[in-house]
Structure formats: structure tokens, C-alpha cells
Image (cartoon, rainbow, N blue to C red):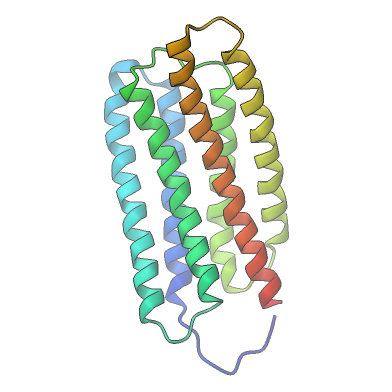
Length: 206
């Protein structure tokens, strides 16, 4: 850790932690969707929209703080990238839930639960990692594990696509389900973007 002679704005740490905690809320709603009756999905989608709006508010708060701070805890472009990537995760999770409701999906294909389990684990790791930005300590295992999870998500996604195109579903259903599993894959990619940004920040600060 480099020794600093200048004070730094530390509220960013709390805001990043709040944003990541909100993502955990979103991942729990995804898990809840899996076991919910079709009739209960619209209410879950409403709660997910509220969580997504809370995520937007958290992101805007970070950007506002960034624009009004003379001294920041790390590079401005990294703060912007980290906040944007955290926001992307929530956007993708909300989109997935919304599509399930809008498309009136009766049953999600086998393998979607594995996608959501990966996202849930990545959400927990990310929430645990954000407070550690204060010290930049014990973060290596975080970004290594998130990258491993993203690789796992890629494999699950490819298997899901193969399953969707095996002829069991009609063409319209394939299009609907593919869009949902693709969005969940984008959420996994966004978790990796967060982890890669944290690694970049840690390297710069070392």
C-alpha cells in the first residue's frame, strides 16, 4: 500500500458497499422467482424493479460524489467503471425477471437454476469484497473466484443453448427463453467486469 500525504474522500467505500448489498437483494429475488408460482411472479418483478431503482439511485449518488470531490480514494475512471459495472449487474438481473413475466414463461428450462446459483454466489463475493477496498487487502481470492464463476457460467450458458435448440421447443419459445438465458449470462459477465476493475484498482494502489 502506498503512503499518502493527502486526505481522501472515503464515502465512496460506503456507497460501493451499499450498491453491492443491493445486488445481493436482487440475486435473492432471482432465487425466489425460481420457486414461485406463475401467479406470484409479477409481485416479485415489482420488488426487483424497486431494487433496480435503488441501484440506479446508488449509482447516481456515486457519480454525484465523484463530480463534487477534489480528492478521490483511487482513479476517477476506475470509480466510474466500478459504479457502472455494479449498476449493469442489477440492470441485467431486473431485465431477466421482467422478461420471464412479460413472456409469460410457464417453466424455465433446466439449467437456469444453475445460472442463478452462480449469480447468487458472485453477488455474495462482491458484497464481501467492497468493504475491503478501504485497505485493498485479501482481494486476490475474490477476483480469482469470480473469474472462475464466470467461466462456469459460460459453460452453463452453452449447455442451455444446446438444450434450447434440440428441437423440444417451438421457434417462438426458443427466442423467448434464449433472450432470458442470454441476459443472465450478461449478468455473469458484468460480475467479472467488476472483479477485473477491482483487480486493476488493487494493482494501481499496491
